[in-house]
Image 1 (cartoon, rainbow, N blue to C red):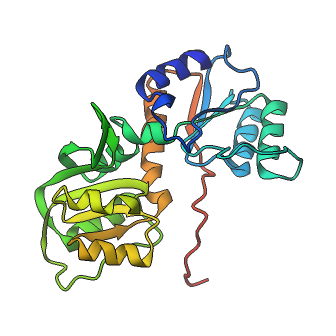
Image 2: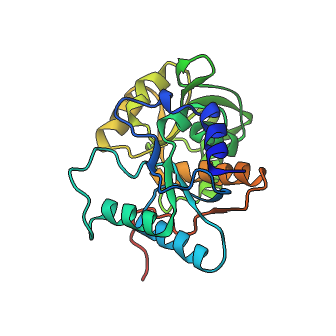
Length: 269
């Protein structure tokens, strides 16, 4: 499958036209790889570490010519591209080594088998629907039912086991043995959806990047807020996307081993 055919297939599934106005989905750097056989490195965030990984794979005989990322490389139009600047370096290396960079962000968040849907699948939520529908069949977040019900303690342990977050923050509660049936999930920064979650009847809301007063807002809305971190809540969708690409028998597909969480929690050194 050529790179152009892979992108065409993807955009029929998660159209870049569905992205938010502030977003920048689609090609970030296209150095002339469209008509080459696709060799893909999938990542959450396109960083220099991921680019170096792609270059090293290429040097060792793996035909990588596309970094397929969830987060965009470029959010705001840069005024210049300079050596030493992270975006400038990414663009320079992309053209030197003929490795394209493509991003699917808020368009991928909304679709079936996108970031929210995969997170719901990880927790085995049933009868799922979007927290906030955007158009028929699309929407942000998912709310579904645990079958069978779990205690809050069991659900938190399941989140830790499945997502392996470096840290787990959740609303204080007097009863970890309370029964949980309805759960809402949204990978990445989902604190702005708390009021929408409150309308779904969910007892627990799993997301990330929540601040102090958003935990207060969640408590006041009667929701147990669980923050498992941005990386941990979105990385599973990257893994699922790599598996989907692999089913096409491409020349090469790999989930990046150099994706970064960007956060380090205190531990015994």
